[in-house]
Amino acid sequence: MAKKEHVSETPATQMLKRHGVAFTEHPYDYVEHGGTGESARQLGLDEHTVVKTLVMQDQDAKPLIVLMHGDCKVSTKNLARQIGAKSVEPCKPEVANRHSGYLVGGTSPFGTRRAMPVYIEDTILQLPRIAINGGRRGYLVQIDPQVCVQLLDARPVHCALAE
Image 1 (cartoon, rainbow, N blue to C red):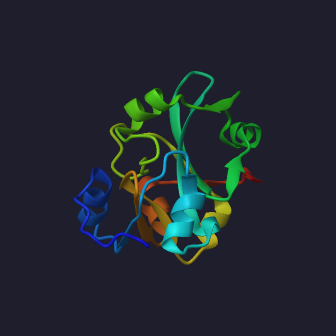
Image 2: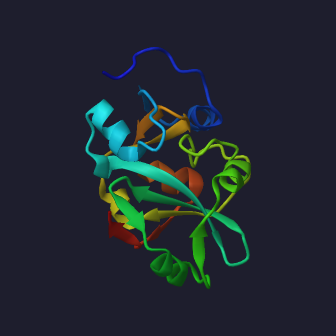
Image 3: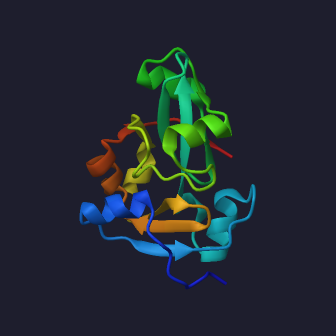
């Protein structure tokens, strides 16, 4: 059963509020390595509409964020080709935490410690609503996916692979 208690603000929710973005809060019981499958199951959501925030880096160790469907993984080869990088790889958790200011498992693309380019799987933008991390483990917010383009200047890419 999803939790109902109030969740304290995070840098992500502060940014959404500051920009007048309508969102709904969806706390759940965080499970280590449970991923989007676990949050989708607890909240009764389709995992395809739960969006992961992945902190990656290019060949020069420059960080970037990829927003991907929960039931897909990123083709780093396709992503690198589309963004003009030689290579892209996931950051180690401690490096991702440093770049984003969030703990892995609670990373939101909103309100990150450092500004990073954001890439969004293009099919996410066709969904009416998405659930994305609200800046804390066990906490998703539902928003219109266009908010990612409006607030983060997220660039559409096509790099999803079925999990």
